[in-house]
Image (cartoon, rainbow, N blue to C red; front, side):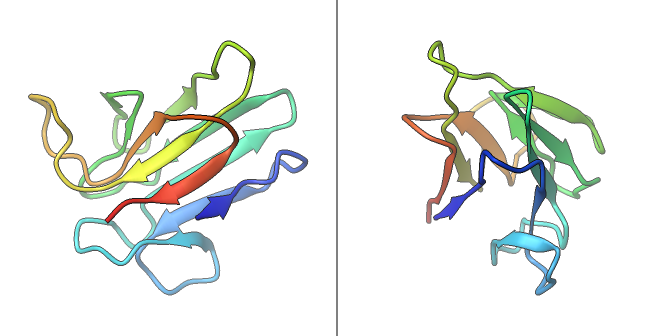
Length: 113
């Protein structure tokens, strides 16, 4: 699992490349070298940016345009929980290989296999 510190606006990049820029490295054929970026902003929001990935990035069930940016919705209490999963997204959209959707309590990222 990975934690995004809420005290910083430092971006965390997700990708399969062995690269110091990738704070989250996912070794999966459908994940691009540099797939997406997750950033916590001091004003209390999390932004996900698709880094022109080949297979796409979904946030809250909606596919981001290639290179697109999306704010992640917070829970009613203002907290964020993120879950990263890859594989087919359960919709009629094209397959997503990187999905972000809200889950339970903190700004903790967990990996599914």
